[in-house]
Image (cartoon, rainbow, N blue to C red):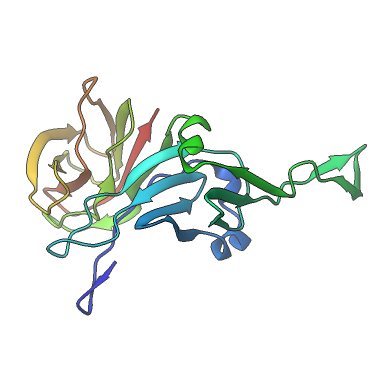
Length: 218
């Protein structure tokens, strides 16, 4: 996010591995689909976005649904939400012949998106990342997902204490949630209680290490 000449980075879950190809980098979209109502399609998940940032913070990013469609673009038209489609299906094993039952336009209401699929995803702020002591990771989205689990791995020769911090309101006010100790060159995980949520989550390590922190939301 660019706010008053300063960039801030936020990380979002992936909804599907099918969007990992390099060509998909051209297709993430953010569009105003109704008056002052913004949607973003990012890596297999639709999100609602705030129109404005308050105090330099983004607090209104909320997952709407997980979908298994390739959506090159979408828009509003005569009161309807229109999704473009680019799905193709191979016919009889011949790569030169494809059926295109979904490569057309989908018309519906914006609220229909909530019925496409429960928000689910995975990812995290670190993946084999060199981590400096007490430097916070990028914020990672937590709100809007039902079940949440954190997986931690590091390569240090000594145990590492990881502090999990949460921003409940999305206003940049961070509070410690828990400290998790992972044995030398070890693995640890944490399941968040049912019903627990915050808008953003981030981590710190108490010593230098190469670490991976991945969240799984179901």
